[in-house]
Image 1 (cartoon, helix red, strand yellow):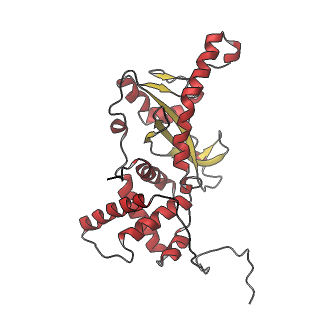
Image 2: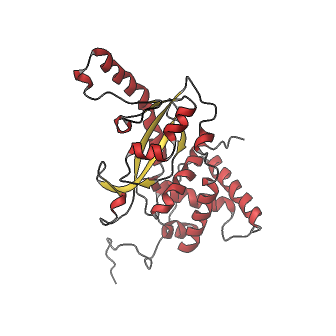
Image 3: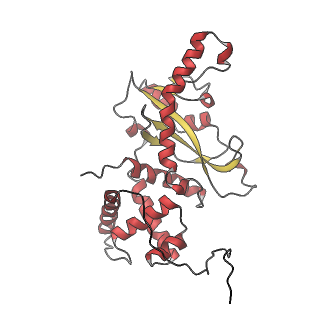
Length: 268
């Protein structure tokens, strides 16, 4: 019997494992495996089908390459349901290590500045799911806010809100504006945050029609904000967030887990 090459892979499709490489540091896999080991000891559940290192590798492959549970499960010799449990457990472990807003701002104060921006994490939604449709991006997704250092290093990622949420509304809902005002931290943001007040600074509209010092302000503002794009570039380097197939309720935890992976210190 001939099987067409364009046959869609589904629950009953035959999956063939193949050798592959994962572009993450070996030390990161070890670090995640130690966190898994600690959780297994805490739960008094030392035996699993896969060891801690293999479980860590499975989860990182899923996050990095955005392969389905069926695909990573076949690659590691476990069922789709087992792969889902491994990923779900590990995301919970990693997300617990992500800093909160106040913790992320520790050490910053008057004289410091941060970059605040928002992005859309695309999701598989239907047209009827109006709250998740972003008119700005013309697609369904989840709104995530970031606070980054001047060099683009992410300090904090917010929980995900429905895609139609305006960036300024999201920043206020997460308490970013008030938290930075309390610490007198200067915030550089784009025009979507105009009207935030407090310590938030945004570019001028129609700056080309304004005096030279307005134009110079916008040029300086853009130059200082540019590194902030690196924070989202690092986040979306994990392909799971280029198009999330999971429930919208799981996007926040995935973002927090990846933030932990981006900032964890595994040198020791």
